[in-house]
Length: 478
Image (cartoon, one colour):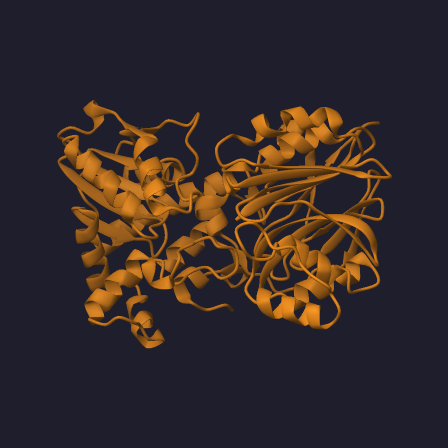
């Protein structure tokens, strides 16, 4: 994944850029970058942030960054921003998204006269450089942005610093958000951010949210729509469930409040389906499982507790490292148990989702070793059956690595799956679905396990279901 932030001010922008970008650190832990334009030149800094927080890597760069226009990013893949000298002039770019047809685009551009692309040290072409090359094929930046998004199979939201301002472009189907904030006063201006929470403490107030495919041009004095939004939106549901920061709003829906509703809906589902259990407390798998658990506890009137406390100062989100063994280690080391809340207790634990299940199984084993009497699992979303092909939200090396697919393979007694085989397990409450959930329960060492229904989860978000992407659960893009 990743996060992007940009701003145009009547004053020096580096400090606001520094903090606004840093407020996206929950979305990636591999690289960070900032670029500031002083009216003549760009000053850029890119650092690896895998072993150190964003702030510690960029504090020394602030003194050198002078200018009133800036863009920044937290990236889990490509080094950004890129700065390009092209037929549309010199511009800087940051992006967030995924390009599924990258090799096809590269071959086409090279055959059409693009001399070369820089290969990154880890192999592959930088997505943002590829986007910049597509933009440069047109005579102006807005046309270039529209062309680039039309050529990309996947998703691409971007900020382009050019023409004395910033072009903010939301993905064609609005899979990721972009919000614009305004700061009043002589030194004020506009900012644009993936997370609306990133500019609250900087003195900006939300004044606009981009629609799907919309391109807005910002200067310190104004904002102007240069490409109108489309009517078709497929916003990623996982932003509310897991990735999004609790204080952010997407499409008018606050993340924290949605998670409360989601937990409440899960409790109501347990009551309705006859799967409610007698437990001593409801707890969340920190951090994003916690608000779901609060909602469940409020509705079920079972006390909320925190038998596992996350040591937040130094541990990143455990999905970030690419090595599974490192992910498992982080998942174990960052959670510290409270013995008196675990030993001899019956616990209901809520998690936002289960991908491979290896971390969750480790946590359950630890809780049992601490003396837990019973462990009951509740999951805020349905079983994940498909890898995200738009934003890498459910990243696995192979699609069949998810615990849901691994379980289906076992139940079907085969080494590969047809679409029909997967489909029958996605129907909530069906015999095949129950068999899959039961086997997952045993794998995770749980007393009971229930997943949230798709309709219950979508109702918790509260916007038109047609505007939400559910590909991870249904395999359907529309």
